[in-house]
Amino acid sequence: MTKLALGTVQFGIDYGISNRIGRTQKSDVDKILKYAFKKGINTLDTALSYGNSERVVGDSIRSTDCWDIITKTMNFTVDTISNKQIDELLYRFELSRKKLGQEVIYGLLIHNCDNLFLPGGGGLLQALEALKNEGFIKKVGVSIYNGKQVDRILNNYSVDLVQIPISILDQRLLKSGRLKKLKKHGIEIHARSIFLQGLILMLAKDVPYWFNPILGVLKEFCMEAEKRNMSTLQLALGFVQSIDEIDKIVVGVNTLKQLREIIDSTSICVNTTEFSNISINDPIFLNPSNWKL
Image (cartoon, rainbow, N blue to C red; front, side):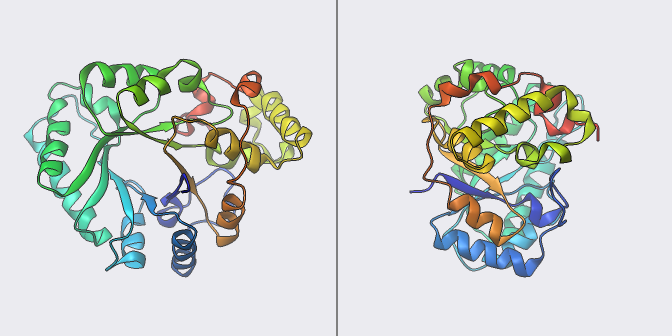
């Protein structure tokens, strides 16, 4: 059974540092989803913040219940969580469910984990638990960005599912042992940002100047792939696929050709300990929301 899950942000907005195509056209979305399902991919990842991704996905899969769909809450930019924000969460979830055309959603994630640690933030997770108890969602979860958030979640809350950033360049949660901690708690782990929006697949000459401080690491990664007669995509995917604690790997594509290339690379596994020298720890470069391009 494949570990791959299909990310859908490209279906709703122009996304990705290496994206030269723009937002994926509806006709291409239909082909991508059909091929993905044929190849055993049955998990889709979307979010309120991904433009009209939920509607595009819903239009393509409507009347089918064979997909496990994960979506996310809005990001609350307030100092305190009150009944107003909880009502907004419930209202927007119902909109998401209608746009996706699904009676039951596999997973609903708090998109900004830090919202849970605002005064009253626990009410957000309580609202998700209520939706789970009512049968509208199967799993309650959070989207995580760093190790400190992992620690706070494990110390304060009980969740079914987490989505984490991890790649051959971003090994922070692997090296710190936090992946093992999450798995010991029986939490389903989904990996995202395994290609860092395509950054680690770019040719050195195409990498924006802003990334010059890590250009040496990017070049070293390319050399490691070449040394093993692999493409950079094969090594990047093989690295994450070889981590036992990872249950699903979220990958986004703009074209059917890109999806085929990823699926054709899923048989590759590597010894992850051989690549500790090409990881970086600076969140400025590991979190795309920090990029200044």
